[in-house]
Image 1 (spheres, rainbow, N blue to C red):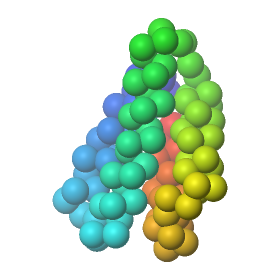
Image 2: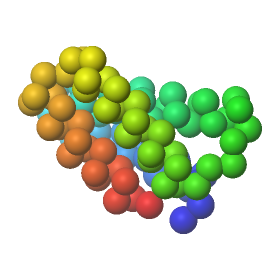
Image 3: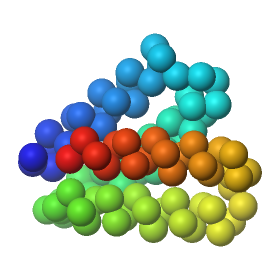
Image 4: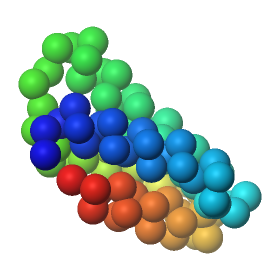
Length: 91
């Protein structure tokens, strides 16, 4: 799968959450989408030619930093991790 196709699939996944997710899942999905979109946007602005694994690594580094800063409680963190695993499986 190309990076563009992966990004498109991830965006569709996030969009689909609006229809089927619980309120907590919507929060976690929106939170994750923010980190994902930031990584994609940075790569586009910097004209980086990333592989999927590199994009995922950038997102994960951002999430780890956020976790260390105490941005999420444990329940929300668990939901973000689960949703992130589902997004990565799209590749």
